[in-house]
Image 1 (cartoon, rainbow, N blue to C red):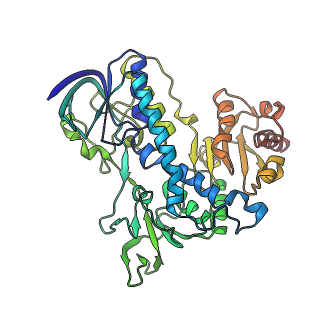
Image 2: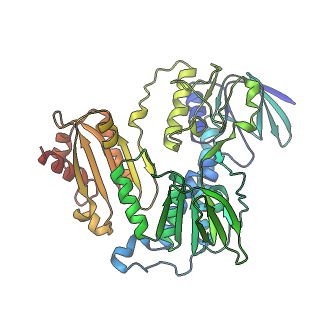
Image 3: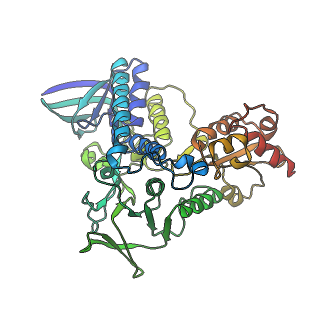
Length: 462
């Protein structure tokens, strides 16, 4: 048994934990991260963001999806694609990213305590390392333990017919010809669109009448249209009562409405469960909600002031980019470093096919707030670069004040949307307006030129 004291002890090494630890280390604080064995980098690296987005790139390449505008809807780089083919790229990226994370922590003298951690009291944790138990104390804690797929008591994710998102990448079998995705949240829609790019017939089921209600309606209408064109069927407002495997070895989802939907595989992506139930967190005096999430104030403090929380464990927006900033800002507050927190200017990236990204206000938010606005649009198919890429789906929407011309929101769907949005983010952050975008010279031919086209379109309406 060994005991060590730290200025900051972080539980979880995902994006929030990493950035909090490194920010504190830069301030010459003594820092440690406690993480489960073989999970350095957290779920983001091993089962979430990095593998799923790498899988998406592998699918888009091997399926030839990006080239089908030119070479036909049946064009494919590889005729028979297996999960082994897709995982080859995933494993390569994961290995490299793991080395980057380890090197970064080592370079900043952040100690890594590998093993399950649990609180003994508000200032002490115990880590079950391979060579025995380690007791560590700290002045400050950051809980960044992340989440895992939530499970339905009546739906068993057996990893053979029925999967959750963590199990999907572990299989070496052939890709199914038909699939059911239960849950039309970000994760469910991302995987549904990936399957459809592989010519899998997909049925998406969700109890809610609308998908992604925090996204601009025009973007969602466009996404739904393009996914439907690519063999995705939406059954919204439908609740799954039970899931069984029939005598033909097919998964059958029975719906509350009496319908039965069958397919070769089912992916269950309804909600996430925070990992706080593994931390004996009650011993620290912190109380999670029914899904294990922690309530924090504007400084990311829990009800116990020296215990902070950041990342997916505090809930929406549950984005790796937001988690990184939350972790960094939590460290700044702990050690009295001034900071500015502007969550209203955080960009959102949804890696469906086509992808969606946005920053700032939507039309619905401005309408509800009774704020007048005007809109400028640019369609990628009307841009030279869009024609070169074969992107017939892309759309950039700029929302702005009709009097001051100040930019209020940016919404993009199409190739490179999550990269393109950052131009608008910079203009928003600096309080810029449509005149700037109209008068700026962009490289030609580029997708960035869409900003000038959209600015001209919007200003012409005035």
